[in-house]
Length: 142
Image 1 (cartoon, rainbow, N blue to C red):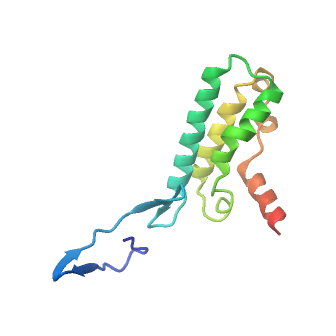
Image 2 (cartoon, rainbow, N blue to C red):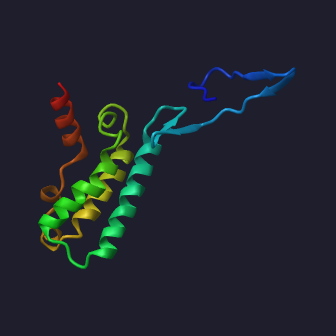
């Protein structure tokens, strides 16, 4: 049971065979790898997505001694980007906080440092910001 809202303190009871049991409220719930919090903010989803993408990136870094730009492009699109964009693209412009966007872009910055040719470039040339990706996604949907 999850109660969404702050002002109403409601208790819920369930009766089974004459016994009344009070239900304990949950603050977060996971369904189809999407985390829903009672405040409906996507911060937990952003944190979980970035940690999953970082673990995949560490796996790639451990198994590949050197990564060229073409190989990195394939690996990033196939294994890292899908974790960053799953269920976040639709909420990023509307509900994401600045700290959530920075959390996701930190993974992108660290991933582009895996490639030697990209390491030397300034950050603006290496990255496509999350807001630009969201805007592109909205334009495609429209």
